[in-house]
Length: 384
Image (cartoon, rainbow, N blue to C red; front, side):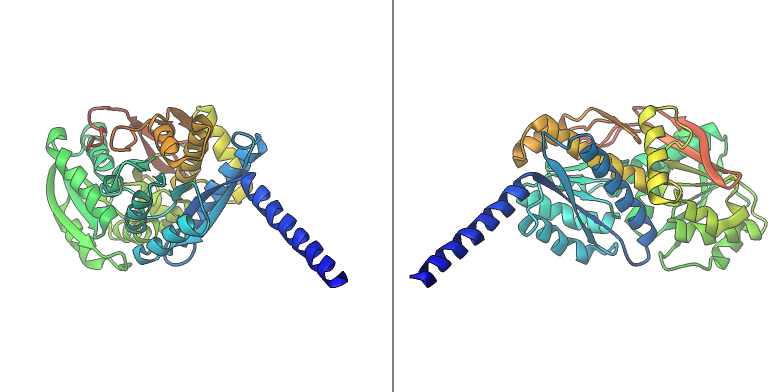
């Protein structure tokens, strides 16, 4: 009898513990997040994850969402497409997240987007630029520019703002570089730009002697070069060391203090198109930069701001939906109108964002405002 009583007590205790766990889980809303925390893109992954974690801390400190705290579930995708699919399945099937956010590059994001779309779970790309990401379906959104849009902005910066007409294009051979080059070339004629040559390189390249020699012989007025901080740093350094002094225009892949550290003095004067204005007077941008640098202990960048933006959009949508129902959440995200550190976020029918391009220049070893491109027609993303 005593043994039977003890067994009943144990069962009640276990049941209570299990129900307590369920109740505790019910008090939290899980948002999934993947980024390259190790591997060649680890610096970007670190910035992205710190930006996302800051957003969650700020949301929870303000009372959470509809009385519930946000829990961020983070995985390392190593910037590899093959890693993103099992991560997406794990976030959806095991972790039971209600929204997924990519803090990663185009390859992993494209792969994960299909998984989230098939599961009908909303998914937000923070900064990956390939056009096929949102074309995965109506549950996928992007809070930063398409590569082609940013490329068109770069053409206006080069041809109109800077007045440079004879241009060499240097293209990184991946989704990122190809998308940017395509956008730039599509708008070149509109701004009187003549592309006198285009050179291509691999993401593994760090020595650019042959390209540098050919660019020097071309004698362009300006150079439009795609790349990430770890490729752009050596490229810019080697161009300047060879005596190439013309303006170099890059994009958001340069947008890191790491680029300046790698390129050294050669970084001075480099201009990029990006999403973050370090000299902004907008309260949301100023407060984000201050809070991020205090929390992270290093300089802010576009990747951090974009991840922070995506989490803020997710939380705002949860609040407005008043539910974690996927269909209700998707509708709420589609109706977003939110001012954040990277601008005011609204989406078109395809889930693409419409906002101004921020041009930043390296001055005295730091990124600063150069100019802004706010041309809705030029920057309009596709609608289908």
